[in-house]
Amino acid sequence: MTIEAATGESRITALCALSQQVRELMDATALTDVPEDELEAITADVAALTARLRAVARETPQPFEFAPDGTLRHLGNAVTGAANPHALPLVVTSDGESVRAELSFRPLHEGPPGSVHGGISAMILDHVLGQAVVVAGFAGMTASLSVNYRKPVPYGVPLVATGAFTRKEGRKTWVEGRIALTDGTVLVEATGLFVTPAAWLGE
Ligand SMILES: CCCCCCCCCC(=O)SCCNC(=O)CCNC(=O)[C@H](O)C(C)(C)COP(=O)(O)OP(=O)(O)OC[C@H]1O[C@@H](n2cnc3c(N)ncnc32)[C@H](O)[C@@H]1OP(=O)(O)O
Image 1 (spheres, rainbow, N blue to C red):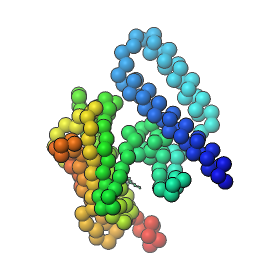
Image 2: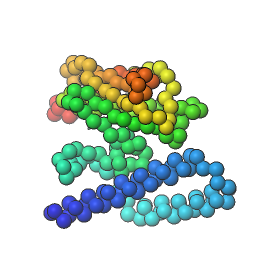
Image 3: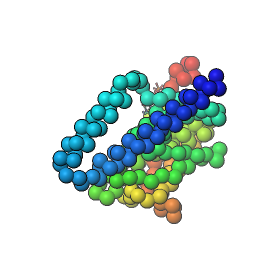
Image 4: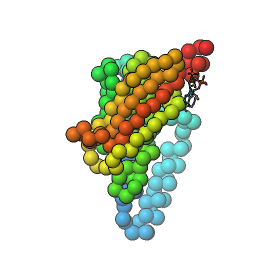
């Protein structure tokens, strides 16, 4: 068992390293200015790598699972998954009452020229608020998310995302959160309503 687990973790480490390299490929692709013939050669190389990865493939991303240290992880998550190149990946911590994540967006996340796409900010806040629901002791899916964009979100700058529980009523949980500069300047605020599906409660 120990040997199998170690082998699994070793493979996961390799998968996460590949995902990080793919993130760097995505960043480089968004910013490259190499000549057209080089672009064509690189495109062929990347297509060959894609075919190698698809030679043995899953139908769904890495699932929720317990890590060897007993913590729950979701390596395939689009926001936090270290094995998902789409993810920053965001690392969310908690003091038991609220949640917090330090993050820095990249040029790849551009929406308006020079700043981050509003949908990307909303995605981060959706996740942070969702984890605030979990930390409050509940579970649910986003039913509604209200986002207030106060200032453009820069990329390449250290930021802090936070989220906290506000109130609960039956299966409905309200939470709030924000993305701010490290000096506390609020860039984006959000409130969310998360609903625990009746099926999750066996109702
Ligand atoms: C460690 C892990 C951390 C994970 C963090 C993950 C964060 C990411 C979260 C997501 O992105 S989840 C994905 C996006 N959300 C969805 O896909 C949800 C899709 N919608 C649904 O599945 C259902 O509509 C939903 C579960 C939200 C509600 O279905 P129900 O059948 O349980 O609702 P129901 O009709 O029984 O209503 C229950 C209550 O919620 C209210 N409600 C339901 N949907 C609502 C809505 N959309 N807006 C406002 N209120 C809503 C509804 O009015 C009612 O209020 P009352 O009890 O006061 O009567």
